[in-house]
Image (cartoon, rainbow, N blue to C red; front, side):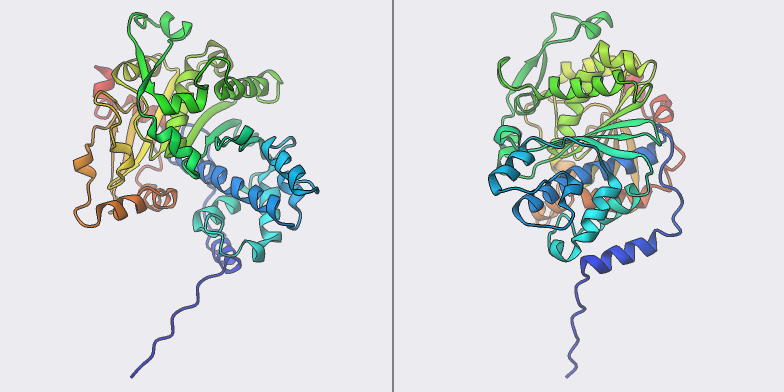
Length: 404
C-alpha cells in the first residue's frame, strides 16, 4: 500500500515570494486611462483593495500589530481605536505603506482568507510599484453603518478612482433585499439634454437608500462623496484628472448609481471637461428600471458617461431581476470559463441562461467572487489588450441598440 503525502498548504509568506517572482518579468501593467484591459485590471485591484483594507484596519484595531500607524491606526484603548476606525483615515496612505504593513505582519495575517488570496497579493505588489499613488479617503462603519468606500489618487496616471465595497456583512444584505423601486429626481443637466421631466426614473430602493439616505434629513453619502471629489479637483491637485468609479457585487450596483448621479452633475462635468466619467463594475445586480436605462443612455450619448459592466457566465447575481422592468445599463463584457468573452450593449442574459444544472447555487456562488472574475479576465486579456473603451462604444456591432 502506498501512502501519498498531502502537499503542505502554501503560507502567505511563500505566496508573496512566489507571486513576486512570477511578476518580475511581467510587462508594465499601467497604461493611460481609456485602454479597456488596463482600466479593468486597475479597477479589479481597487475593488479588491477596498475589501481587504477594511479587514486590515479591523484586525489592527482588535490586535496590537507592527507598524499599524501605516494604515491609520493609532495607539489607544479599544474605545479610542474604534473611534479612529469609524472616523475613516485622515492622512494619505500610499500603497507602499500598505505593502510595508502587510509584510511586517505576515505571520499574524496567516489564515485570514481575504488577505491570503492570490488576487490581494498581486494587488499589493502591482499597486506598490506606483511611485505617486495613495488613498485619500477611506470610510468604513460610519455611525455603525456597513457602508465602505475608498477614494484613490494616482498622480502617475492622472486618475481619481472611487471604489465601493460589496456585500461583506449582514447590514449589506439589508440594502440588497430592499428591492422595491424608489423615484430618482432628474438633474438640471439631464433635463437640459432633453430628458422628459414627466417620466419617472425609478431605481432599486435599497441601493438608493444606502447611497442617499431614506430621508432628506438622513446622512447622504452621495453628497459627502461628491464633495470630497470636488475638493480634490478644486484644490488644484487633480486638475484634468480622469474619474473612474468601480465596485463588486453590491459595490458594483452602488458604483453604477453613483456614476449616473455624478455624470448628471454639472459640477463634476465641468471638472472632467470633454471626458466621460467611466464606470467599471463587476458582478453588479440590476440597478434601475426602463426609464433609468433611457436616462443612462442619454448621458452616454452626450459623452458624459461610459460603463463597462463585467459579468461571469453562471454567476446568478447579475441576472436576478428584482422587479419586472429592471434593465441593465452600459456595455456588458461577459466572461465564460473557456477563454471566451462577449461584448454587448446592456446584455440581456436571463436567469435561465445563467443556470448551472448540477448544484446550481454552489456553482453560481463560486462564480460570483472577485477572484473568479480576476481568473477569467486573465484568460481574455490578451484578446482585448488593444481595445479602448472609446473603440468599444464606437463599434456599431456592439452598440447597435445604443445607436438606435
